[in-house]
Image 1 (cartoon, helix red, strand yellow):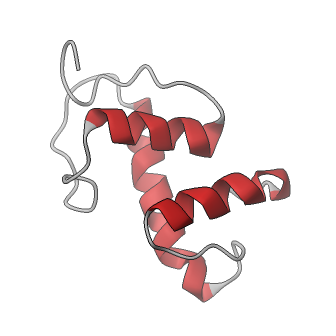
Image 2 (cartoon, helix red, strand yellow):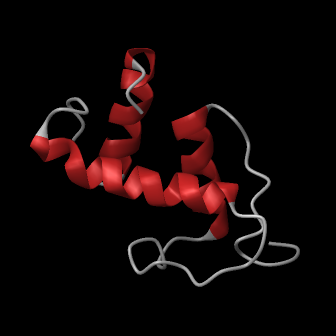
Amino acid sequence: MADLRRGSALQAFAAGHDLEWYSVLDEESLPTAELAARIIAWGLMDEPYPMPESIAGMTCEQLAADFTTLTSAPTQSRACGPGA
């Protein structure tokens, strides 16, 4: 997330979640960074696991779209279980 070239993607991600993104050094950006970290962790899971409360209300499709926005890569996550 510290990659400065990803700034517009991070701002779009933040805006989509009614959050702010200024920089990795800005305290107001912390909620965005925390949510992004949870979504990236979800996107890297290779087996189902209980969703953290902070992302439990999101669908697998929403999480996958956010993962792609944040990483510029598709996810092969199995966090939602088989066929999800």
